[in-house]
Image 1 (cartoon, protein in one colour):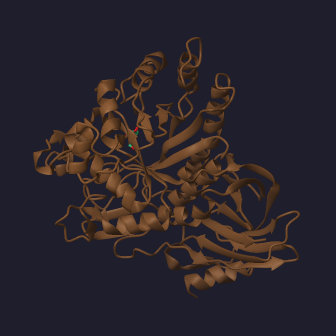
Image 2 (tube, rainbow, N blue to C red; image 1 turned 135 degrees about the vertical axis):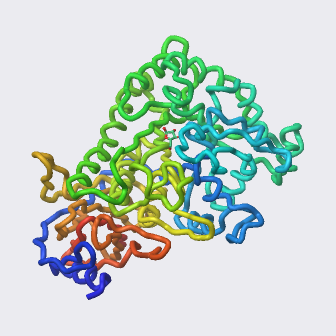
Image 3 (tube, rainbow, N blue to C red; image 1 turned 90 degrees about the horizontal axis):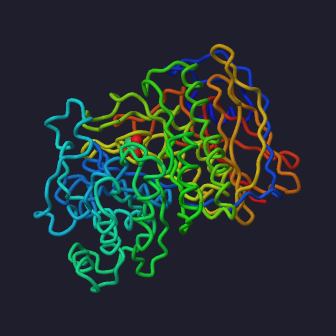
Length: 531
Ligand code: AHR
């Protein structure tokens, strides 16, 4: 029996399992599960920008990942990896953040504009942490990829640029001039003319600007009060050139609510200023080896990853004490499963790691969390796009592959811009370790016109979930489903087998106003239901 047949059979309710290393296991018992989509309980429109990405001048992300060079044998659009652009278009990538991350607060954007041959080579911020890479090109930044190249990458990919300003080591005037380079009308200023010479006479129209990055850490080691003072200096009189700037303040790490409170009581307290568009939150899930882990370690990783929902709600509650009209939204511009290094295709890929179904499951339920909190989250960026932590792509020279995370973004793309509605999920809990437990089914739902998208995660590594879907008050006329799973949770793609993990059709049957389907163990499923 082929894997495809298993998926179809599972959809019909058969309880056979494709086990580790392709061997057959005894039929597993199925768990009875329920999902209810409450169409009359809308949450908010899901900002397409929740499905955004992050690229940093770090290891193999930009050089070797995004940028291959104009003369490269790797197919490219003026130096930018062509396959990457095409894949980003396919998943409707809405926004891409650059140049960092920690790199941003050591970066002088002026080094990366003007004639490429005249651009300086600098020591990369990450050189010190690039263990054993003393001779690798990644320890230096040739500045061949600068603002114009980044904006072109975004344009080609159909995404909007999101730039992070250097607050730690440059003054606000240099930030003002970066905005001028990007947004001043054609021919109006010297920086606009430099931009034109770099290939973009028309303004880039950059709306999203991060005011620093992790200002509590690599972005300056500020206290909340000190950072708030910097935020005032950087944003009070920034030139706008008619572009509706969306300024994003450097928020907390994980659940550091004191940082949130300290910042907001300063800027919205006795001498208030205009609130930022967004409050950046970084929330990584730190785990062990990307490829070697036990079932229990995977569940423990899920427990840690699922804390994102509490983190978001905690910051939201803290912000509400000062921002009563809820003008500021959350921007989760770095998240993902961060494993020990050593499993990436190339040694110079700092923080590079393979991506398995474990990561895909964590990414999927994180996106479900964002959808469920669509009233609070305005933008998110998965860290990082290629050759790094929790990546959607891996590349080595001309070799290029999509990871299971890419397929999650593909399955979830119909949520972009749709109306999030509340959904309830019920399935037996998973028990593991010493008295620990994790939910057995979760997901999110949205509606666009007459079509409902329901995404669901079955994290159970041994038991399929026989799921009955109900949409009270609605009749489902047609349903289609796709599922992402593998022989087991360690499944991943390699250059030799780039499609080992890819979405497959899943049988979903309409039955008396309900829909039935069987979600394979360790899987991510997307259903599209026409009402
Ligand atoms: O994504 C890697 C690093 O993690 C980023 O540069 C930084 O912002 C975070 O600590």
